[in-house]
Picture 1 (cartoon, rainbow, N blue to C red):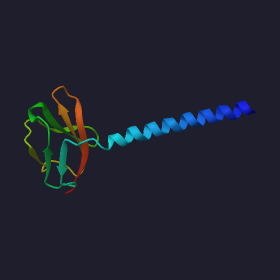
Picture 2: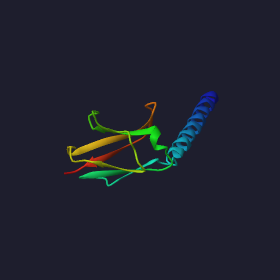
Picture 3: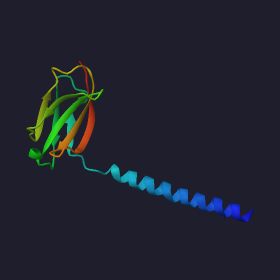
Picture 4: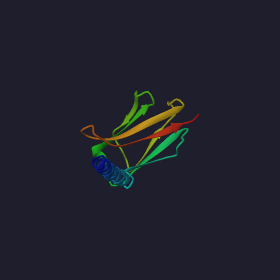
Length: 114
């Protein structure tokens, strides 16, 4: 009986330590500095993408509709890139900031209302 209590106590101690480690690692994810600021959200006729601390010639922005179809790719980025939404349908869109190797650096979503 004493062994069972000792085993249960060890399992609870390990589970508590693991949970604390998971919480501390997820807390660090919230402190990540964003490279892209986008506004307005929701948007109707245009959306602005502002970049900070990014060498723009190395990156591109890809826009996808909510079912995953790429609807636009912007390669010539400026510190404040404005994207016209005149040809976009109403709905939720996802953007991805990718480097020249295709690795996604940052992503987010915005809504188009018309």
